[in-house]
Amino acid sequence: MTNKAPKTALAKAMDYLARRDHSEKELIEKLSARYPEEEITAALTTVKARGWLPPAEELAEKVALSLHKKNKGHLYIQNFLQKKGLPETPKEPEIEYEKALALIASNAKDPHDRKRLVSLLKNRGFDTETISRVIHEIRRNTPSLY
Image 1 (cartoon, one colour):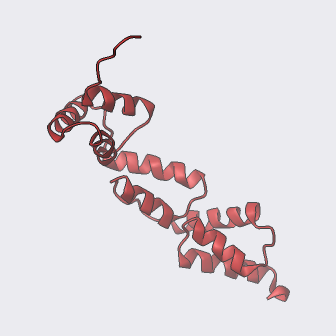
Image 2 (cartoon, helix red, strand yellow; image 1 turned 60 degrees about the vertical axis):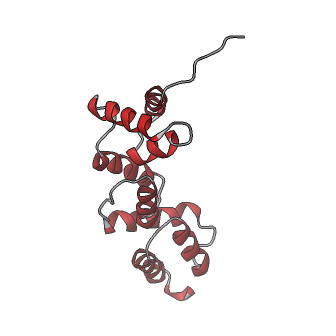
C-alpha cells in the first residue's frame, strides 16, 4: 500500500481541464470543496497565465453548439451557460425553429396532440415564440385536425 501525497489545487485544476474545458466558476466551485481560497486563487492565476483556461466567450460558443446538436432550446442553453458562469449567446430564431420541427418529427408519437407537443418543446427549453410558430406550422399543414 503506497501513501500518495494529496494533490495541490493546481494539479487538481489541471486534472479537471485535461478531461474537458471548464469555466473559471466551475473550477472555483470544484476546488473550493478541498482547498483554501488562497491556493485556489494561485492555481487559477497559473492556469490563466499558461493559457489553459479558454476565454469565456469561446467556451460559451462551444458549449452552446454542443447543446444545439442535442436539440436543446435557447432558454435551456442560456440557463446552462449561466450556471457555468459563462456569457449568453445570441438567439438564432430560424435555427431554433428548425430544431423544434426536427424534434417534433423525431419524438412526437402524435404530431397533432398539441398539449404534448407544447410540453415536449417547453421541456427542451424552447421559448413561447418558437413553440407558437411550430404549432402554427403544424396546424397550417393539417387544418382538418384542428
